[in-house]
Amino acid sequence: MDPIDMMTTDYNCEYLGLSRLCLMENAGKSISDEVATLSTFKFSKPVKIIIFTGSGGNGGDGFVAARHLLNRGFEVEVYCLNALEEIKSDDA
Image 1 (cartoon, helix red, strand yellow):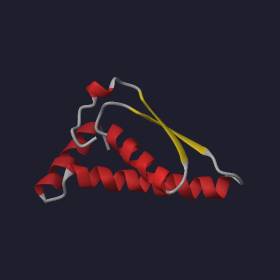
Image 2 (cartoon, rainbow, N blue to C red):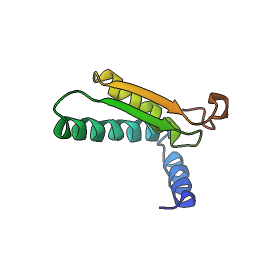
Image 3 (cartoon, rainbow, N blue to C red):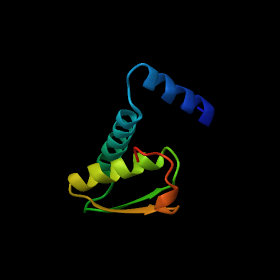
């Protein structure tokens, strides 16, 4: 899926009643579920999770994933590769 297809999908979801915040929350939760599953099966001891985000639409997904992982007891560090003022989405 290219960026234009993704943007179209996001707008269609919003038109149908799914907010961008809901989409971001679901994406971040799914990311955290996968990371938690992989880290549990791949490593014998707890691992530190490092998440790199940008200022675009997917950056918020990383922040949501970090929150869910922290709530599960993981040690998490988040690095935003842009100044926080550059974050484009109010939802992020």
